[in-house]
Image (cartoon, rainbow over all chains, first blue to last red; front, side):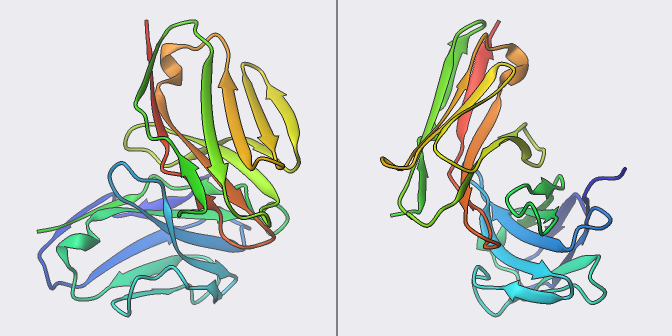
Length: 114
Length: 110
């Protein structure tokens, strides 16, 4: 079956612009995670959904970042007033509740803020 | 101090060598430990996982956890050029999100 799909794969934007990144998880996976990975670093947790609700958003760096998952499937990560420091690869992963550590990652959305 | 510490390398070995990758962690509450492999410009993929202290073997790969010293290891036997990637250790508890190390970049030279 299909894996986790993320779009766009690459996004170049200017400082101050608004950006949306989309994640389509594996069908039937109720848990969905957003991580951010900077060059030479491991993935850093941003937000986690169980179904439609955000179960843990403690990793969001500030109020410019927001994520939704209105129907419990596709999720969108939204970044307002982008800054150069937001440049990174944004990774989405999904899992089943019975195996929370076994994450299936997408290939990521590479965001570059000029 | 980060909850999961990992030497970023890079590590370069000849083909056929035994590779040892290591992490330490600080949170005693962690219950399960994972190793992910990440090829360049790809997402991480799960390689090995363990839920207790001891060894777990899968082909050329062995994952080892020592909870008393909070130490996680991954051994790769008969390393191949196709093993060249970044290896990420991670730890978790319950349904809380995984905490990842920085990753160790491995190159296996033919």
